[in-house]
Amino acid sequence: MSKDPRKQVFIADYDPAWPRSFQQIAQQLRGLCGPLLQSVEHVGSTSVPDLAAKPIIDAMPGVRSLEDADACVPLLVAAGYRYIAKHEDVFPQRRLLALDTAPVCHLHMVVIGSSFWNEHLAFRDALRADPETKRRYAELKRRLALRFSHDRGSYTDAKGAFIRGVVERSRKP
Image (cartoon, rainbow, N blue to C red):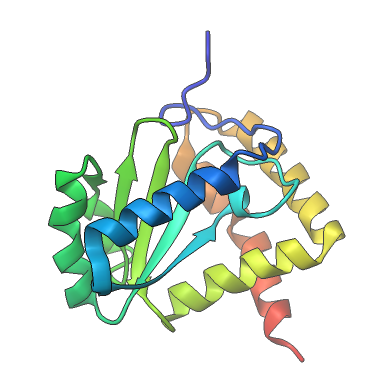
């Protein structure tokens, strides 16, 4: 029985296909949204070489405004993405969409330069730059995936203090 990353939290060893999958997704996004997208960044654990991760590609399309993000949503829905508006209560600055077919993908569409944008890039870059931080994060994720295998929200919440600490350290000169 294969594990379904949409239904269960599990951590897979790094897959060198993840960056290629992201590139294909980014190319598709640019084709669908055109000039509304200013940038598409690969974020999340699949963006960090040799880091174990949930096998879900996290892409962060960057736009100039939330109005541009809102204009992209119907284009992405027409292409098969599922719009998940319920999370906007917690993150009103983000439009979240998911592609549930392989490769499973989450889009976090935000304004370039926003705190969401900057913090996600800072965390990714810190993991890429520091092997010890990357190792500690992988260990934490594996422990939490065992503990919260059927509770993605608790899994995500339990990583919060670690992530905030890394982002805070990245801000110090």
